[in-house]
Structure formats: structure tokens, C-alpha cells
Image 1 (cartoon, rainbow, N blue to C red):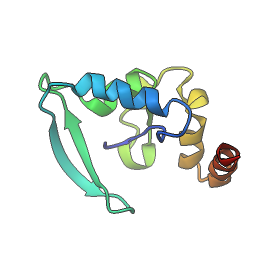
Image 2 (image 1 turned 180 degrees about the vertical axis):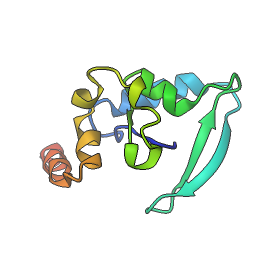
Image 3 (image 1 turned 60 degrees about the vertical axis):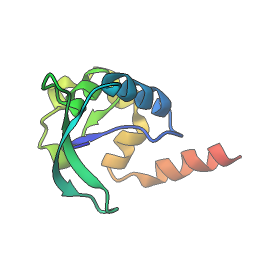
Image 4 (image 1 turned 90 degrees about the vertical axis):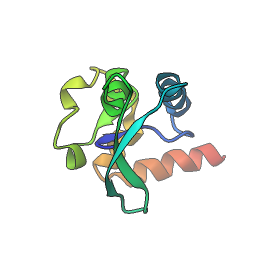
Length: 111
């Protein structure tokens, strides 16, 4: 989804984010307006519910995604919950280029 960063499934809050998105989308037709392709070849799109709500915004409001200003231009920053960056610290680390934090977390998960 455009402009936000959410936890991976195996990271803290990853499954919670997945199920929150599932609940928002269940039994609805989602409109996806493709805007780009990321460095991994994944399609990036602005995704909307039938009532016009932006799915990226909805996930940020729930504290299960954070704005990624590099890509969004800060579009969702004002919607972030006060504890989102602390709670989603791995996503925050990714945005700030601190991938060593990820590697350390993932090596602990393997033990």
C-alpha cells in the first residue's frame, strides 16, 4: 500500500496488522490505483474502500502502520498514534536505514 510501512508478519504486531487489514477489507471490493513498483518488483497502489476511505490512512489511524515520508511526502504523518513509532520500532528502523536492528531481531527469532 502506498506511503506507509507496516510490520512484517514475523515482527511484533505483524499478525495484528494483518488481521486488522483483513477485517477492514472483508467482503468488500477494494479499488487499487497503481502508482509505482518498489525495488523488489512489488506493485505499489493507493487502495480505497467502497466508501472512499484510504486503507493506508486507516491502518495508520489504528497504530498498525506508520507514515513513510520518503514515499508519501508526509501525507499520513498527522494520523500516526502517539506510540506508533515506538511500538513499530522495526518499521521505524527500516525507514531510518538501521537494518542492523532487523538482523539482530531476526537472529534472536531463529534461536
